[in-house]
Image 1 (cartoon, rainbow, N blue to C red):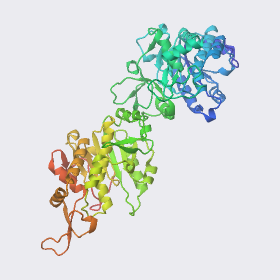
Image 2: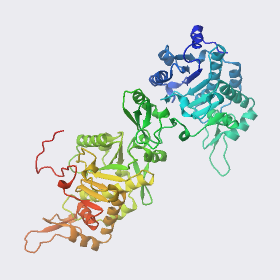
Image 3: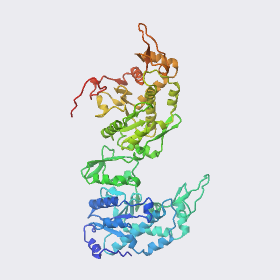
Image 4: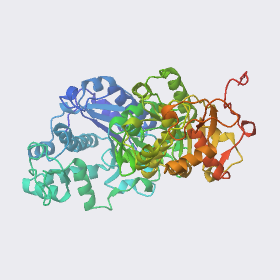
Amino acid sequence: NWDLEGYPMAAYESMVNDGTNPSGRHIIFTIFQPDNAATSDYKLNCTLIEAIVDSTIKLLFPEWRVHVLLNVEEAIEILSPRQGLTVVDYRRAPPSERLQKFDTSYVSQTVNDLAFEQFCILRWNLIADYLNYLNVNGVPVNQIVTLDSDVVLIKDPLLVDKSVDWSMLETYSIINGAAVSWSLQGMNNFVDFMVDSYSSKEKATELVRKHGKTFKACLGDDHATLIPCFIPEGESELHMLHMSDMHWYNTWVSMQPNLRIQKPFHSMDCLVVGELGRKNFNFIHRGSDVVEENAQNEGAYCLVHFQGDYKKYVLPFLSFVHGELSSYYLNTALDLLYAKPINMRLDGDNAVLEGYPLAASQAIQNDGAHLSGRHVVFTFYQPKKEQPIDYTTIEAIVDSTVKLLFPYWRVHVLVGDDKTIEILTPRRGLQVVDYRRAPPSGRLRRFDATYVSQTINPISFENYCMRRWILVADYLNYLGVIGVPVSHIITLNDDVVLIKDPLLVDKSVDWTGIESYSIINGAAVSWSLQGINKFVDVLLDSYSSREKTAELVIKYGKTVKGCAEGDHVALIPCFTPEGEEDLHMMHMSDMHWYNTWVSMQPNLRIQKPFHSMDCLVVGELGRKNFNFIH
């Protein structure tokens, strides 16, 4: 039995008569910080704990009583006293006979931190002993929900399933381990099962072999004291078995699945986010509910689990839950993907992005930005020996674009300058890609092998202007391959400022049915993924032979008075036209190639004068002045 010190017995006796106890409902948080917390991954964020506990009390008290079992002095001081909350320092509780029995027989078999895993196992004993104490002292204990300290409740947790009779169940797993509903009998049955499972080493070994998980790792004898590490048949490296408290729980649940319920999230009546990082959520308030804006499932949410590094989102999310924000875009699926510049590597003819788990990449397809599949792509270039980049301007333009369009469009920057990468990274809603680290795709290699310059522009700049379309297409193809919808693309030069959604320039076109739309020649172009790939393929084909290129340049290029000799005229030498005295040369930029390609299918590739557009465009400054107002 527990003997709780420091709290007058009258406080517990009064619980019998207050609003919580006719229903006997209890929320239990268990908080653990190991002795070496300063040097481990388990340093407690007391500000976060306080916010979650306060939010839970505000939501559920007095219908539910909230309890915190913990071992952290700072948190005890911060949380005590609070109306509707019982704070218990479990270190002061002499262990029950059951806990002593388990403690002497428990043997670790885990890939986790040893102290942390031992607490995860022991906590169910601690909670059961505490609730038994309350029950013996006249406090009704009919319904229990245990929560990890990173779970945020939005509604009563029992709303997750309206089809069950909660009084008849021993347990209901809402979020595996992190949010579990119990009856008092169910919790005691589970604890008794674990004590019995460790009653002999032979029994524990048999159960771990049957129900544990095999990991390709060996963390040493102290982590594998029950079953030593081993090399499976056909393998060359050591493996080990891992058995967490949730493996024990799942084993116990499987013995009586009619009384011990586990359901997938999608079948619950009130929605649950069990794990962040797989998709993003654009939350809004709808009456007293929190729902997703424009989601297929318009149901209300009950719980969100902010596991691991996602705890940083708890405080702003709570501000939203309690009405301080009208909406909240919980952008977690892209954090891993958008945290730092991506490196691209070669896989056959495809560019592949390194350094990010595939799950994060796959998650993009479900977030708010990518339901529409709209992408704005800036391409920045800084050749050597030319004037420096105006970083302040670039940063301002990118920030403005993200602010205007995110999350309905995703913004990407393909850049080859270290300082630009440093300045722009990281930013929410922005992907920065260092294209210098991308080994060229097969298409880009073929282009580099056949490209011959014919330009009045600086050669390195013109070469980049040609190559950028292949870089952009390769990058977008990669996104498409990993499951990111790519339906609309807008490529922008680094001197274009958007004021509204760029697709508003023309309300008469079906943007899904065209390959390209030139908004500002070269500087702002809309594409479909098929369109940009077709343009790249035509560009490659145009340079497939010197004869073909020369023929096309003579037909579609621009004659310029002057002669930039050497590599500028590597395809067609300078010449003196009939009736002229000065040398002239042919010039063929990437936009001459684009205009040529557009002319081949003008019904799918649109070019319109600015005055005919529905949303006005300033394609070139210097011709008139503008007195803008709101």
